[in-house]
Length: 518
Image 1 (cartoon, rainbow, N blue to C red):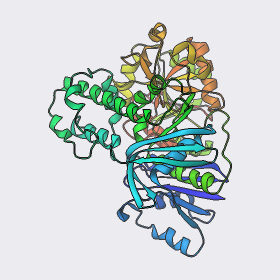
Image 2 (spheres, helix red, strand yellow):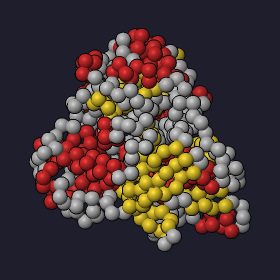
Image 3 (tube, helix red, strand yellow):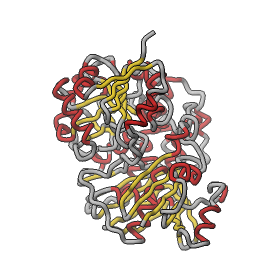
Image 4 (tube, one colour):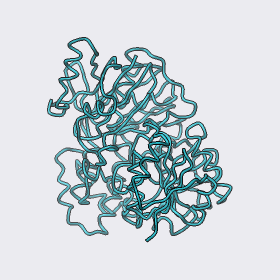
């Protein structure tokens, strides 16, 4: 049984294929268009990658309240269904988020919460738009507990990001820049605007964020801190209605849970929880996976996958050596040669910045070792160097540490799983000065825990780096420069050439690329 899941609307277009209960591939349009959060015809995108629907049994998708949000050639699917070549199955928006969270986890039973800017789900009274939903998952079933449309954290952050900070609240060409506001919050004073905002309905559609558009640059950091504080208080209050003393496992999805500062505090708010899971693609691109998972497990009763450690985020395709070499030979301003992981460790140890590329690409906003830029976290200047010369972004923006999973308890105040950079946690004070390039101003970091079963190459590379540097941590940031994470070898080479990355390493084939110096 082969199921095609589609995500379409105004942003985060993607498709996923699940075969007999197992995710085969997931690809996001933005990786190929090279435009962040672009809108596009997901049916054309799928056909460009797979040519036909011949081997697809069922196509599933989530509904919209207006037909204008459907692909212009959606009638292709309707005609195929009419002729009984494929079946069509509609899964609710938050139903798909919840399915993606629960069925990607290893939990046999869990409370599931979704938070975002809104989406349509089917009810006995027709379609209903909500932004906060709660579900109960058990084995291969998920059941709704509440669909709440009374407050909207996603739209609040989107509108605030655009109208107060003058950044992109979502969509092309920059994608939602709320993450920058979240980083600013660590530097600001959350008391500054707190009393003024706490009693206002900032979670409604009609709050006038633009009245704060002319505050000073210093005040913007304080405003960000206030927004973050109010978000945490609101989410904690709403979750406390559903998380009881008997709740052991929690799954989260929806674009709002990309706020990893907030999710990291869940461990403090609800210390009795045994584990918390956030999927690698919690925002709307993950709905393509979720609606197919719901159909596969909840409806068709296919058994769930038992992950060895975590559900793999590496859901793209692996490019062949021939494809890599063909791409490299198009350029006359680079040279390449054989190399190995030990040599890459030497380069990093000598303050070089190395982009690494191999295996199937990661799904999601965060690079996890297969499309990453790596640097030495022990170098106190490295954060500023990478921000200025590679990522071309604000100096206060932090970088993630990738850490060997079994070393967590030596470095962080909590020993928990964070395989997809889903949580911001605190470094232990006594080790912060050992890796200054990945410690945020408040002593925290949005970390990635790495196991051998999750990513064999990256785990073994971290082991070699630990021997070389004395730390089990490396600075990891997404392989891009104000654009989507690179997908094809050509994308990798182009990004390498237009930035001050020192080397590009295709680790599948031990190929090291250098720029030809003038």
